[in-house]
Amino acid sequence: MFKRNYRQDNGVAYLLLAPIVILLTIFVVIPFIYSLKVSFYNWSFYQPSVFVGFDNFKFVLEDDLFMNALWVGIKFTLMVVPASLVVSFLFANIIKGMRSKGASFVKTSIYIPTIISGIVASIIFVFIYDYMGGLANYVLGWFGSEPRAWLADVKTALPSIALPAIWLGFGLTTLIMLAGLHDIPESYYEAADLEGAGPWQKMWFITVPLMKNIILYLTVTGFTASISQYELSLVMTGGGPLDTTTTPNLYILNHFRNDVMVGNSIAASLLLFVVLGGISAIIFKVLNSEKAIDG
Image (cartoon, rainbow, N blue to C red; front, side, top):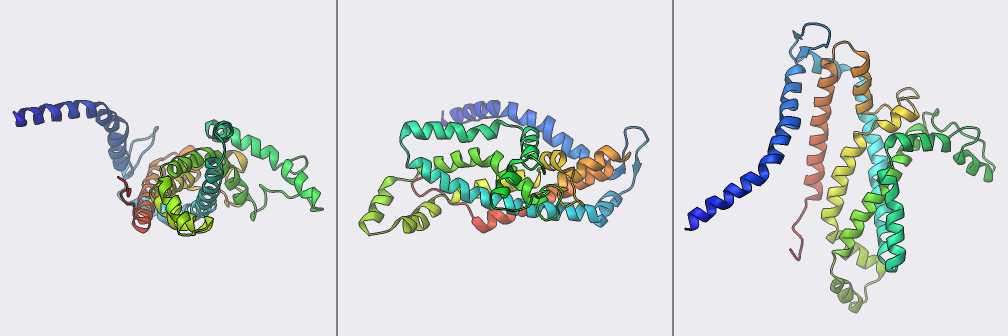
């Protein structure tokens, strides 16, 4: 009887999993295997494919522009992810202490940028950074500073693109942080109050450790999203000036649009996949997610 019920439960489980497995197979597994095959060919829409082995990978690895794009992606991520985590964490704490009506309005307001596309955000910030009439230079004028060409200066172009990236992800990151804060039992803070702990001690020894899994999740997803970003660079700077805002995906897109043979683009995509997987694994190893204490 037990074995029969066990088999029935397994059958139901497999039936429920079947749709997602089929979809993943069609849209993820098969394309990945096919792209892996194509990466070993000089593949084109217009010419017969020629097997070239690892030449495409060798070309990409020896291309200074690809290495520069990876470095730009890492710098961009280091600007976006830590700032996003810190600001969202602090803002989530502020929302938690607000009254329910005010908190609901704020949560709705900060989520609005999340539903805005990267293209629309790019256009908005291009106007903000405009040299003659942009808001950024208008604010600088209050302090007696000269206008700056934010998107044309090699020193300010990447940080100028990082700011809208932080803005786009701020709402969702804050709400996830807020959900994690609400999941922490109030009894921990009450016990800390009895021990005479101050706000910073409670944050450092209670809130941050119990938010570890949330921080891990947001770090990995934020890293992946940031290093894969290309819309902001494409619209705001086109990858310039001097390729200082050419992210890995923009590099791949440019090759795909301009090269007759797309094997190099696919090889670059697979190498980026390896980089993303490797760094994500390092993040998991360093932060080391743990089971919830009350789980």
